Every structure is written in structure tokens, then in C-alpha cells.
Amino acid sequence: MKIVILFSIFFSLVLTAKAQKPTNETDYEHIYKGLEIDSVVVMASRFDVNDFIRMVENDETFYLAFANLRKVGYTANNSINYYGRKQKSLASYKSQTIQSIDGKNCRTMQIIDPKTTGNYYKRRKSKEPRFYTSKMYEKLFFTQGKVCQDPQSVKVKNKPTGIDKHIEELKKLIFKPGSKADVPFIANRTAVFSKRMSKFYDYKIQEKEYNGRLCHVFIIEAKEKYRRRRENQTVINYLETYFEKLTHQVVARNYEIEYHGIFDVKVKMDIAVTQLANGEYIPTRISYDGRWVVPTQKPENCKFTMQFSDFKIKEPNLDGK
Image 1 (cartoon, rainbow, N blue to C red):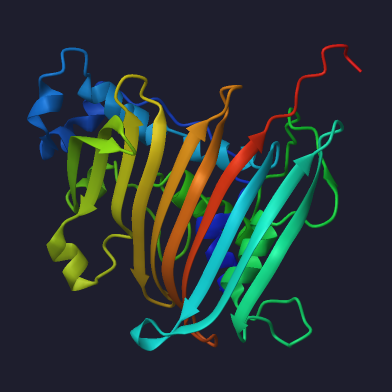
Image 2: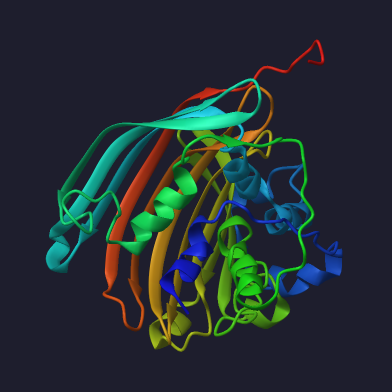
């Protein structure tokens, strides 16, 4: 399995969301048994634990936020760093990208002041990164040329098969971690809300502040004894989602994924989102710290951050033209 396919776990933006079967109240009994809740949350008269868990499990905010990047103008600051032993920097890349959307829903992008260090590109005059992480980063976050689409359209695709099917399943790990990912080596170990997987995890509901906003936080954490054994009983080590207390608007998600087998991977990601004036979600920051070890490929240790700002919403065409 090529590393490009594996990176789809974290970065692909074209997930087709699947309808989830409604969950009955009794389905969460296995979670209630070991659920740890802050006393402040318990005292909240309007807080319904069952509804909150269901909301966490079915939330699609992050899928919508990433999909919306193709519908708005924005400025992004990009910083990518590859490092070796003792955190020594091997190569890096920095730039600013500005995406523009015209009246026909076509997007273009400018890359401003790109700077690199080390052997970031394959050849001195080449613009092709030597690192797979960067190749996938550019494929997903850099608009090449002029791309036009109808943001309201929904294209029906044939049901994927083979490797394409595995890719679609792997994409759930970023947008809906906790859903079952039907792929080789991982199987149903990502379904952290299931009765089978609940014995491997501790569940917590806490009240915390995030950037000055009081939030209800749902935490799923693999029990230390299973993480220590490295028996791959779990794939998601940690999953933390922040919901603003008053509105239950999602504001951030932090998680860690780890697997050791035919390939080794350990990745931490922090993602912050916000709502635009039109009510749509958009990411404001992506932070990545990961290591991949894949057969026939050199290990890649990479950290990157992407900061988004200056969002521009396309104004609706009121005259119908």
C-alpha cells in the first residue's frame, strides 16, 4: 500500500458523507458505565448526556469545514518542517497562499514568497517536493491553475471498489473519527463508540476554556495498558472535541492516531474551526506532527501548520444572472 494512499487518512477533502443509523438511548449504556463527568457539567440543569454523546458521534463539522475551503477566498500561511534525530531540521518550506473566487465559482491561487531550506525539492530547479507529505499537502491545499465548480451541486459517483473503497473508508479518520473504517489492518478498531471497543477506552466530559470560550469537551482516551502493549487493539489513542457551551458550536478537535504493523504511523493533529457570516464552517488552523515508516520508503518526520485568515464569501447573485 503506497504512502500516498495512507495520507488520505488525514488530508483528503473529498469525502462523501454517509448517513448514520440513528442511535437509540440504550446503545450508550456501555459508555455510561465508565463515563467520568466534571461536577460542573453534572450540575448543569439543561445538559443531556445522551444527546451530547450522540452529537459527538454524528458531528460532521470538520467535513463541512474542509469542503468549504473550495468555496471561499482566503489567505493561508504555510509552514512545513522535516526533521531527523534530536529534532534536527532536514528541510523546510514556508509561503503565503491567497485563494480567490470569481463570480462564476472559479478559484485561483497565488503563492507568495515561497522559501525553502535543505533538499526540499528533488532537484535544485525542480518544483516537485521530494517528500510525500508535501506532495499530498500541495495536492489538497494548493489550487493548481483555474478550477471551476458549482458549490451547490452534488455529483453522484459510482460506489468505489478495491483501493478506492479503502481510501474512502480511511478518510473517515479525519472527518468522523469514531466511525468504523472498513480497511485492511484497521478493521473496526476505529469505532470508538462501539460496545466492542469501549473496553479499551476511558470516556470523559469536562468543562474547559478554548481561546477564551467556555466549552463542553468530550474526551476519548485509550487506556494506558493497551497503549503500552502496542498490540494494535486501538488505532485512535486520543480524541478531544470542543463544543462552545452556550451554542454547542464545534470549535476544535485534537487527536492522536497510532498503528504498528505493515506500516508504522504515529500522528497528532489539532484542528480549529469557526463559522462565517453565512453560517458555514471553515478551518482556521491545522497543526500536524507525524511520523510515517513505510516499506521501501524512507521514514518521514514532519511538522506543519496552516493558518487561515481573511475569508471572502462570494456574495449571492440576487438578479439571477
